[in-house]
Image (cartoon, rainbow, N blue to C red; front, side, top):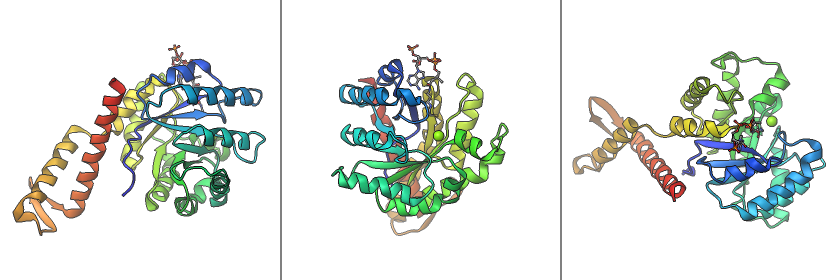
Length: 295
Ligand code: COA
Ligand code: MG
């Protein structure tokens, strides 16, 4: 079974920004992606890495914690990896992944560092080659530590020249290919960031579309985007009620052996039971997260 951690909202936090680091520990995002890559200028990289090391050691974990490192082909990547490996985070996010080899090289490096098996790798898919190879990255990566694919729309736009309109129509084939690759091999898949953080309506529309596409959640750049993403990617109350009815119906003795039943005028199959159980379990996990955040 795929892991049921809620990943409705994953906020990028620039490691070079002391105020953002401090504030991040108070925010209700399902996860924080501490960034050492594109939001940190070349001259700031070493200081940002040290600030992040100190922050991760001191601040309480309020959700999933991920560090985005610089690529191992840069002069910062190896030091970033060593820091992240020692920081007790949940995952390391690799930028601009274009081949399974890029994931496996980091997995091998982590094995050499005796990293625990539950330290996962996530891969940014944000180049033309990365999109083309997404299926192979997911397939081979899933055999080692790879647990999620993350869309990087800004790099995709830069590298391809695509200029998506309001509904992202020009990007849809690529986005769906990334979703398909992730789902084929049991990986989580997260939609890309929405840069215009003052445009609440546009953001809500993109969240809703991302959810319809099958994304587990959205990567974010600003605290104001957390609550709308949490709402958009949470199971809605009608879906929860329907799932409860499906579970109850299949639990009835007369339906115990049946593969298909009729419920509220609709055909319901056993595959819907599994989906209903998954939804209820996810909903429970979200409720638990909210308990933790309230404390
Ligand atoms: N993480 C944590 N805190 C953040 C934040 C983030 N990503 N973005 C903003 N904040 C904080 C600000 O520090 C400020 O804190 P305050 O309580 O002291 O006022 C508050 O939220 C409001 O921020 P605001 O003034 O509206 O935005 P800003 O002008 O400070 O920052 C950006 C705007 C875009 C520069 C900033 O949101 C950012 O750096 N985002 C992430 C960029 C990134 O990581 N990119 C790489 C991945 S695409
Ligand atoms: Mg990028």
